[in-house]
Image (cartoon, rainbow, N blue to C red; front, top):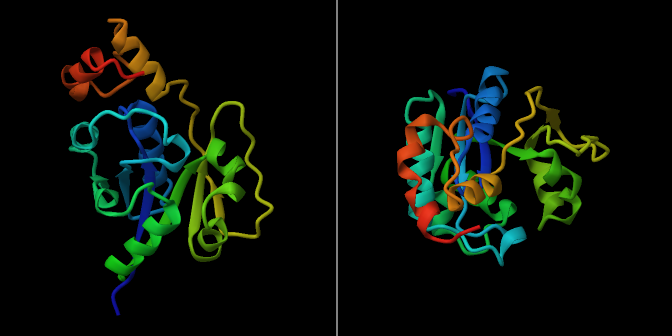
Amino acid sequence: MPDRIRTAIFGGTFNPIHNGHLAVARSVLDAGLADGLWLMVTPMNPWKRDQKLTDDDYRLNLARLATHDMDGITASDFEFNLPKPSYTANTLRALSEAFPNRDFILVIGADNWEKFANWYDSRFILDNYSIIVYPRSGYSIENSTGADVHILDCPLWDVSSTQIRERLSQGKPVEGMVPDCILSSLGLYQTDGIR
């Protein structure tokens, strides 16, 4: 029987993707915690239902551009075909059914881990999937759940998609915050009025 493929799932709106996202993804693989990582671009985050998002395909294409030369990292549109909002528990169920040869591992930030008990069907996730938690400034990481949780050792990145959108809407540079390969493709954030 062939070995199962350990696949990390790092979900988000990636509105837009930035160097902090990519550093987390790379750190997961460099630490040997997964064989590959899928950036799961979500069409609707349950925690951000009121947030106006840039077009799904636009965000996905930016993520694909940003990861095109990163071995083991793939930008995925899997959630585009699932019911909205995109509950992680439902996504993991659908992934496990669609890819029975893979063991899926959830990657989340310390900010989300702090409120994880409030996630939809969080107990199902804790009981059935490993979780990798990466540090976020201002949030502590403690595990009192008894679940299989690994704390990722990676640097803190003081950058957010919100900051990038604000800078772009004001005509300010974002070099060093996003991969160079997408700098020329961020025009929609300058004209769309999305904050």
